[in-house]
Image (tube, rainbow, N blue to C red):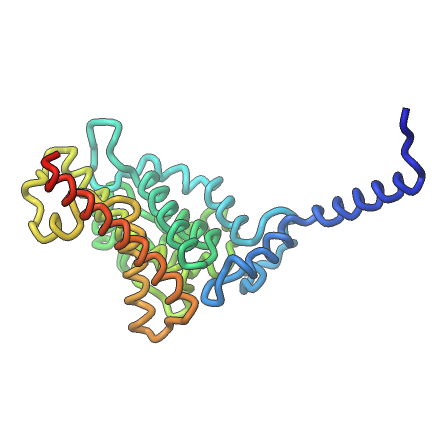
Length: 296
């Protein structure tokens, strides 16, 4: 029978305490990890401009992860399931609602944010909250309110009101400044917006352009044969996820190039993604040609 010496007990206890001490604040670990994962053109949680009302930091979640959780658990977020995306009273279970649209935008934004070495958690928080202020009946409801409300009604401004003034019985969700600006900027842009906010705006466009068309085809309103020939030739009948991500990255590149904000780090990431995409596309074409020549 073997025994553990006092020295061994001391060493085990010491390292156990050190490990426990290291694990007492996962948030700080994540913030340190972001120094590696998030590039210089992204927003690191530790560099956030904070909240309108100061709060004690969460020991587990970063400030942007906390924002995403607050939005997900809000009443306004749950109400999105009853708001239609395009069709006012769709018959069937497979048409998009404002909630499913939000989830699609969120997944796209996280993927693009990861590819660009931006802050995925900030992308997620902005995407989850971007349509909280949308009306029922899609943009038709927004136009109706805009006509009868003197100052004018814009859903992106209402989304900010929801998180600032309406939720929590008027106390609001007290989100980080970067999340708030991203929600406000998701339609028209904003001088103080982050790169993450730009990504969400582009993902919003790509998501609704594709799934609205998909819903219209499912409803029999538009046939694939009626689509403009140039769109079918360039993009295909339905875009794959890989094509969507590549298209989004190209849109972000165009925006950064126009505004003079490109960096060597971004160009490296973008070049790798483009090379991978066109490399796989070229291989598909080559395989198809080989099959044709072989008479398969």
